[in-house]
Length: 233
Image: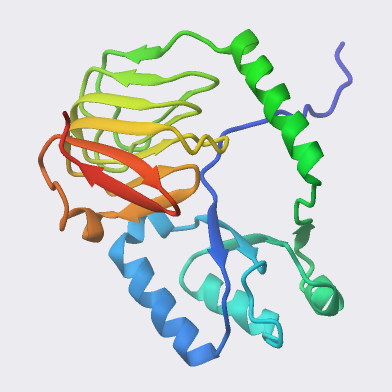
């Protein structure tokens, strides 16, 4: 008889990162309301990590009030990231986890890049190919590989890949490429009607996409900190 009570596994989960610059409760609540209303299904019960690395140096937000506002709009805060020392005690009272900021020397970063390149050559997998429609509520993830979808991705569906995403049909749901941080990842689709597209954590919602190549073929890539949408060439 197996007496093991549980097993811990890694998983690909879409997490919203809220980068906080400043906090005034009424303004924050209104701006968050406006953003959530752009894609209510995407933000419904979405897990959120609150990043403080761009917070104004002298800001002292009311974190309990901030969390209450997030929950009021059905967001689920999980943790804080990059918490400055002078706010550590205040953040600790919220009971949420704290994810430390990554601090590495240039030489360490260089070694990490070499390690990543070697590992990618060793473990890179063939593209994951999906020939059936991805229905609402379904999630497809290509771990360590590109994802190729030969059928439509429905509204409410989600496709994710560590590499590129190719959709040879209509994208109505959400597509997230480079989910492990690959800033060179791309998204290609024949018909851009998406709720959300994202590369390496940077995303665009449907309202902004409608000003781009809406219901047309599209190539989406990351330029700096922003997503660039262009015609397929």
